[in-house]
Amino acid sequence: MYLTRLEEKMLEGEYGEALSDAMRVLVKVGEALGAERLIKINHAHVSGLSYLTIGEPGLLFIESFYRRGARTRVYSTMNPVGMDLERWRSLGVPWKFAAKQERIIDSMIKMGFKESMTCTPYLLREPRRGEHLAWGESSAVGMANTYYGAYTNREGGPLALMAAITGRTYEAGLHLPENRQPTVLVKLEEDSFIVDPAKAGIIGYIVGEQMGTGIPYIKTSLNPGFTSVKAYTAAAGASGGIAYSIIEGVTPGYKQYSDKIGGLEKLVITKDMIEEKLPPKDLKPDLIFIGCPHADLNEIAYLAKIIRDCGSRPSAKIWVSTSRRVYREAHELGLIKYLETMGVLVTRDTCPVVSPMLDKKYKIIATTSSKSFFYIPRMHGIKTYVIPFNSLRRQICTEN
Ligand code: F3S
Image: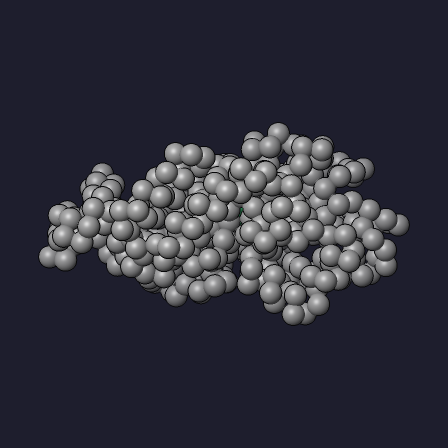
């Protein structure tokens, strides 16, 4: 692999052992993937920071980089962790867990990471079209490529950490325009499916399940909107390895592919395929979860409106997970206070998937997120169903 003089010095250890190790990892992975050089990135986003998922080995790995002098060289953000940093005590997080989690966060912040703890880093710094990023967190990777037209591979947490420390990533995969061509044409029996974020998530789930990897070209005459694309990319990255989709009317530059899709293999998403994933009509969840990926302001405002329209406290427990940024905005609008008065739990920094806060007393969870539908049963063994946004009212209102 070609390295600049500065990169060679980094690799040789002139700027310290940690930077040298990080360079070595990137060069090795890059060479294995056929990269001819490293490229500079503008933003690194590191996933895999919950003590629940990475445990002691992950904690020691991160601390060793910090202790050996690793520091970020670019704007760098952190994915959600295992607890709400302000309220973990009252939410039943064991103090032993909290102490370990705080050590992880402490090392990351001292290395230069923003105290972001969100899977929606694009709401903190909007990716620009064509810029190179190194992001972990598959849902965010999908958004960066699909919605913003930025270039990032789907990195594992450690590799994104190496990218943050070096300010570079290997030039392979989705960093190369020739690898960003559509491979399957996805048609929807009804375009309107993609407008409901929960159904858009189911579409993503089916696309990921059926394709595994590759680049779907989603044909639609309707603009799904931000929240639906967020739900779609998260699900497609959970049930499969889809890191980039081209959505008509959404993905920057999608028009350049419109004459290349004729000969592609086709996948038709029918009404039946979507309905098969929906729960029975008489579903009685004991927890409704919204915010995977972290809820945006529209989702929080929509939930508040449903509860207001109901005119009574929700019949089921509701948990919303969001980022600090959106929480602050919702707080300024009076939405957080209202939701909390109505018994809704709104957490920051974490989510039920990566946190020990998800109480085993819950037996049935309903969620608007197909990503959570995929992960909650696997991580926590709790039965989980996806419910469309337009049926939230029925689930939430006591009188329905
Ligand atoms: Fe984010 Fe947790 Fe879902 S990290 S994408 S809310 S699983």
